[in-house]
Amino acid sequence: MNSGEIDIRTVDQPLGTGEKYSVTDFAIGLGYGFMLTDRVSAGLVANYINETIWHSSLYGFAMNFGIQYQIIENGPTIGASVSNFWSLFILQWKDLYLNYDADPKKYGDNNMLPAEYRTDSYSWPTIFRVGFAYPIKF
Image 1 (cartoon, rainbow, N blue to C red):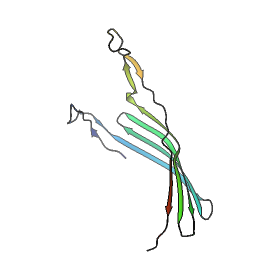
Image 2 (image 1 turned 180 degrees about the vertical axis):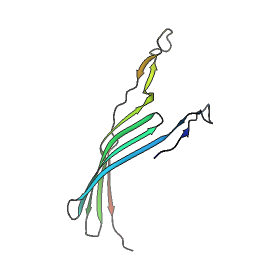
Image 3 (image 1 turned 120 degrees about the vertical axis):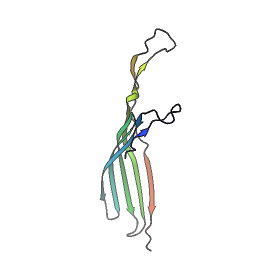
């Protein structure tokens, strides 16, 4: 998905600063499902996710797993899934680099020291879901 170009607006310039930004999201997954028995099936999906907003970008991987049990043939089914049971994401942005002034109130101090913010990788929250389905014939 892509938002197209969006005008940057501020409180001081509500009609726009002349700068533009865009938002892009991309996700792709590769999955495999299989029957364990005649009534139990399972599946596993590996996902790659990328999101970019102006100077920021996030990318990472996540794994999902699910299992389904058919209680009676052509009858009710119970299913469960675990999403993001293994995930790793890294956030980066151009604005991590800045000029640093240790004491801005002190005159004669060097206010052009190159510095960098550091970000750690992190995991998305693990989500557990359970569901029940019953087929109804009309």
